[in-house]
Length: 188
Image 1 (cartoon, rainbow, N blue to C red):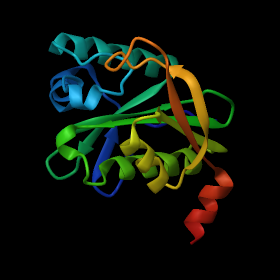
Image 2 (image 1 turned 135 degrees about the horizontal axis):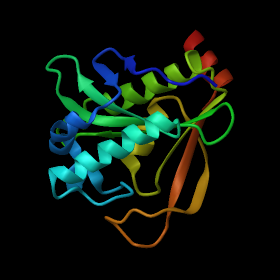
Image 3 (image 1 turned 180 degrees about the horizontal axis):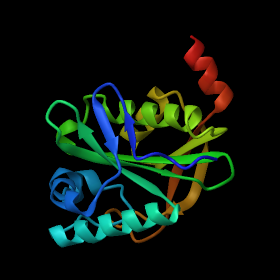
């Protein structure tokens, strides 16, 4: 599979490789907001230095090819409203993650970013399958995956720890879309 590029564009968003200097925008948009980080695998950042360290880790992962985190920027005012992630768990498969600033919820940005990342995965990275997961109680994220054309695959028992909810592993929902399903959707 090809390595991802530094940018993806959707109708209303720029999706770009982050840099450490983005830490204030990322901190203010979502990493410090407990409403947004409820279903994350880490606690909300109390300090901007926490977000700076997080971005350094994102860039290290980008550079070693293990994970590709992107900042999400509104085209209209160039503000950071979240992040999206591509990773490659298996050959020809892409996992996508996304997080959107609370003030931008219910405006279709999560669906737009997920649809854009799915298209990019099939058209540019030549993926055969794209996957997403969310906490079993995260109905908003589940709805985003459905709107993006993904299909429910299974419940993943004790899949991930969400420390803002519990210190114990929680069940997750897995959704996927295959290349053929994507191509059928694009044709209609």
